[in-house]
Image (tube, rainbow, N blue to C red):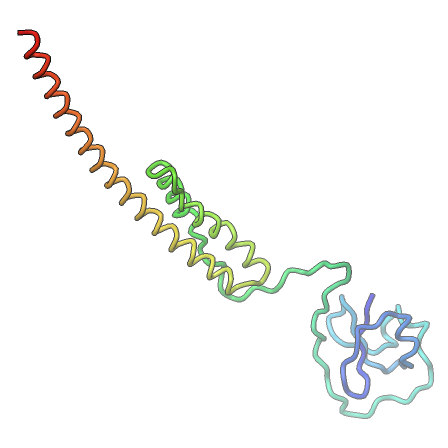
Length: 188
């Protein structure tokens, strides 16, 4: 367990119990460790009983009150969840991205650009949970923009394909009509 202490009116720490042995703390030294609601005197912390030196003078009157020390990340690479701002996670536009992906795959198979929107959408929430709020908002905006662009591209390519198929169909009918007339000619 790590402890924070007040030395010379300043917060110091974190310290292990072994490190506190060399700090010459007294029963009146203000101490805090994770799990304590507020600062307290070292003599009131049972885990520090072996370190205390008795008979030290009390602190001067009107000693300042100290706030809770900033949360220190625990060891071994674990990062606790960061407090989230008051606003909620931005809309990841997942529905729009799925529709855009399906439309681009079915309308214009070689260029499924809706997948870009889908990738952005799926990363919004993870960025938000990691505390990367600006990046999460940027990903949400990119997902929306790519989704809209994908749908517009799919509709435009669908219309172009319809025009091409209609033109090819008309050309085929003309060609068949000419062949039919030639066949008519040879049979008479």
